[in-house]
Length: 256
Length: 227
Image 1: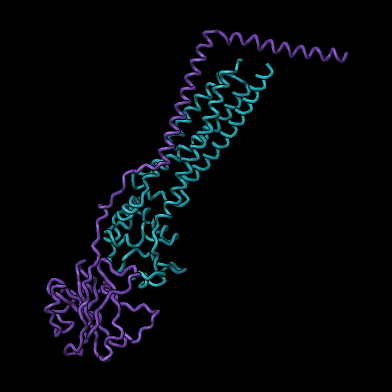
Image 2: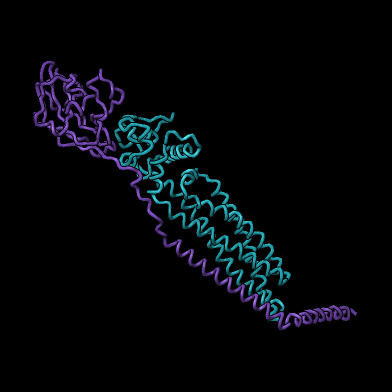
């Protein structure tokens, strides 16, 4: 009797510990997803115009799942200590529902990350940057995002300034090729925000224009976002899986 | 003159665009003609063979605005030898950008405009020294220069989702884990059902009571020890 008593106490201890970890991870997940949804790099407008913003849906689900995990972990701790079968059954069922939601979030984030290829951004940039005649906020945000991106990261286009040369674009419709082989923001700027050497920039003299592409600057934060939501969520779910199995086993042993 | 105009160095990003191109300046070429105007002739390849070099620059037959419809060649970018000093200092970028003047492209009063080339077709150029009444020297014709033809953005194929290995692994593992949990839940519910049928939970209740009995034993023991 003493032996199984100890065994049950150890199991209880482990389950309480497991639930504490779940609770803390839940809060961490909520914080992380709030960070991603707040879009610190200002890249959301690039996705907004297309049909591919579901990577943010994954983060939104993550916020609520994190809260749910925290609340359920408290319920679990109470249930384990009190050894109450009904409470634990409720805990397991609610946890499974939360588990399903978190699974959806992880898979969505991981899947939609795969859509973010260079060509995806290239096509969108060519079609929307500097598109005249857009009175709606949508078009303007794309312009601002690309301008900021090119200025802050000292880059040009997706693959490089040759993007503007190889394809026609909304930008090309608005600005002729001789004066603007590529947007002004591709030029190296001085402290006042104007090009250091405009002719050098138009000629393409290295040192007066940015010859590298912006794809890396876009993909870095997007990757962090997607992997943060998907793989952290995956880790939490693996841990939750173990705790839930333990809880089910404990539940079946309660009134030993 | 035994000189062929060439494009500038290839590490200029804007060497050839859709309507401009960049030539090397003809340094150390026109040394014998210090006071003549040196013009650049831009022509369609078909006009090279019967090119009449005595047509004066600035006339309608050599006007930029008439190119390429009414005239197969135009002359522009006139300067004197003063602007092409010899020898050339190696660090300087000595180039001529053909097509950089957009303001006069449609201005018929500026026939010698260095306007943007109207189409991405092929062109050939040469330099011509002119002394006011006729040509005095000219270089060879350059190799054909073809400008960029641009593609439509709709031709860009946005690659339809190649699923990465990570995403497939993640989905598979999570699905398996979820399936195991659901199976566990089912087992639990079946177990619970059989429990109430077997009535073992009712058996466990007395056991709990008996444990308490043991506890009370201990409680009674202690006052006995004190006594």
